[in-house]
Length: 316
Image (tube, rainbow, N blue to C red):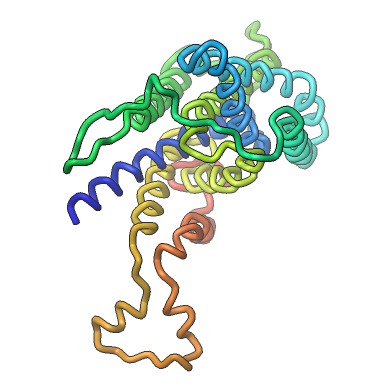
């Protein structure tokens, strides 16, 4: 039992940190620009595909650097030549633009790599045990994922909350005319923010792509859970995104490991439930079966009880 709890906790932390890696860029973009980017998970997907292709020619470690930079360049181009013009027409135009962009990126991936999953396996250079616990080895690539996630959090929190450039970027959102009057190029700052947010998503794709199934629908599968994390943590809150990611990761991982239902609880309590009972089918649902809906249940409860999220300052 202790082994199950320990490894479930470790896997939950890894999954939670992966969610944070994916959601941190979106949180950054919202915090600094007020834009909900529906194509953000597509940047994650591009990072996974780019790293797979680059690693085939020059290796994993160069791909870890080059792939996020390429995604960041794409993000900068998207903001400069697309989103900036949509922004003039309001939030609805921004949402429709990023929503359509997500479909364009998905079709772009299909044209280049096909509709079937690619063999994006763990690279040999990081495919070895990090440590052994209870006679079971824990892979190094998961430890690397943890380290990169923690480094990403430190970069975002310290870089944008404790440095001069971070203060300038935040002021550009709330007082753009004042920042411009002080001699700063506000449009260029927004390009930089969108590029950094996209690059972070690309970095998450590099390190998380081989932990998941790399295929053209991965962005559509991951996109909803990213928005759940951002809303739970509070729109614009980096620490809130980290807390929400960890909660969802750990709770969902433990839920998957629990093969119990309400019928099992009733048996322990010596309560008989007949098969013709109207709620028998509901009582028979295993916790593991209900695990995928837990994040969305938390989302609904959060929107009812605290719409601004755990650490958010804006109403969602």
